[in-house]
Image (cartoon, rainbow, N blue to C red; front, top):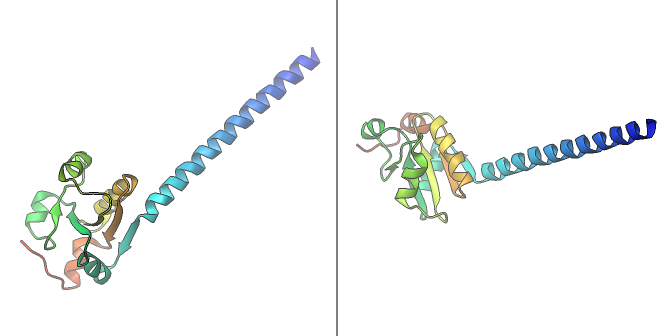
Length: 144
């Protein structure tokens, strides 16, 4: 009887040990996936962002609301509103994954979230640190 209990206990320890290892592996893989997505996102200050959007192969996207966009936006920007419908809107525009996407919003939070989503989809993303508020504070022009 003692041998059966010992064998059962050993089996349980083995089972839980393997499950714990599997969970650790899953957590590590998620963290690595998150780091690789982060590696595809570059957050730049205003001057560096301005230089980047002036280069070839970069698409400029404003993720603010349509009203915010109409109140003033960076020249040449496409408005794709960040929210529940973002991925459908994004896919409808048809931007290729070989293109660098430059994102901005009002202060940087929405564009950061959109950047993370796009990085997970395989895009290389540049995010404007501080959003259009920082852009305006630096004296950069906006279009209406």
